[in-house]
Image 1 (cartoon, rainbow, N blue to C red):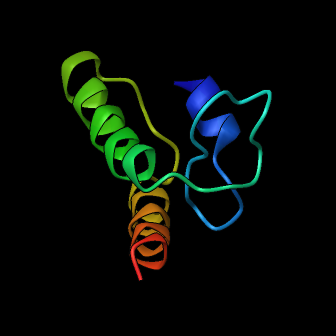
Image 2: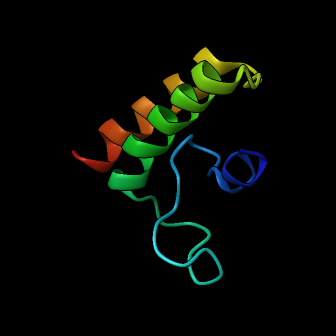
Image 3: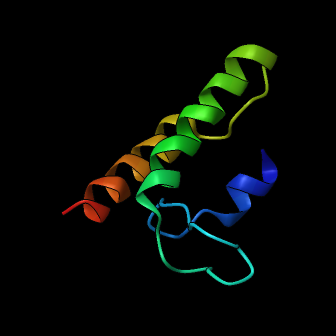
Amino acid sequence: MNFLLGIRLANGAFPGMEIAENRSEPSPFDTGLIPNDLTARHRATGDVLPHPRERIGLACRALAQCTE
């Protein structure tokens, strides 16, 4: 979980492809999928996601920008 939170872009999106080759280009697929996975992990394990609503809100706004 820390790895995923560590690669999140400043606008809340997540990069796609190989992280070593892409640290700036958002991926609509990953930006939509990762917050869902983090939420499922939290529900299954009780892991605490710092500021979950803020992080998911940022990802949703970034996803909307990716698809415009």
